[in-house]
Image (cartoon, rainbow over all chains, first blue to last red; front, top):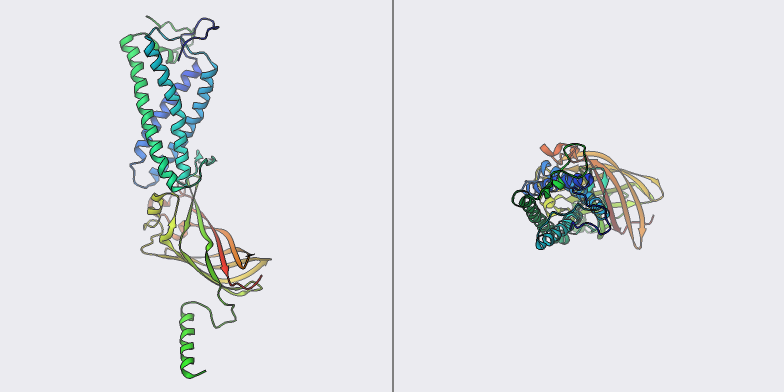
Length: 197
Length: 195
């Protein structure tokens, strides 16, 4: 998905620092939420379980908001050029990123709907009540619960694919693709010296 | 009145009085609770999240002349096992000993002491609320309005769950689960004298 625009000046070789920051922040939050999600559902009814559920919901809503910001940023800023690669890989990367973005929205939205349907409105950070898009409805909550879970599993699977592809570029292709997403070590020219063919 | 009838009547009156149903004093006839238009709901807060529950089964004995509320009486009995939330998990949890202990205390109750008019269709009902074996005095503001042939008594008040040991041990922490519980009620009554 990273072809340079036609009318563009020379393509940058790195992602914008804002893109890099959002990528790693969201990576951390999403992996954390997946982990908390897997943990909390197995806990007996307890204050810890309640606390984890609330943290999970706060993280989910934050991921949703940051993903919207990230998408907006992505659509209004130029991506760095891809290193040379076969067309099918380029297409696969584009599809993978498309599905990732779709799930960045679908997973938290399904979770939010599940919470509302189960009669637990989401109160962000314990202070900001968020609207319920669906009313409390036990049958609906039972229907949304597996949807949220399977969407989350799908997200985890696509993340594994994404990471595997990045590692392939780093260690097999050795094309420096991953370095485009690495934070700059120190202030310097935007074009990274690290890209080699 | 034959002696036999008198004995039957006296026995009935005694039984009713024993059951807490007023018959002898200058009280109006008891009104009938209409389950269809009645509700007792409560809202708890878990980490700032309002979670609403309802009691599915309860009964009320209301004998009240709105023009002379002082002689009236209100008593409510709530089946604690009938508490329902949006989620099955909470339904299963709330009846456990830590919470309402429905096995040990199958009923919660309210029994009025004095009833005072505070305005048109408004009353302060003082009484004793008993949940899970603990009793607290409280004053419940009640609004009474005609609704067709019936009357609707509604209002809300706040109780502290720890006054009644609802949420013990690890759940006594009010930073996780607020101590205050809002109770809302709406009782549709038939056969109440006019306002």
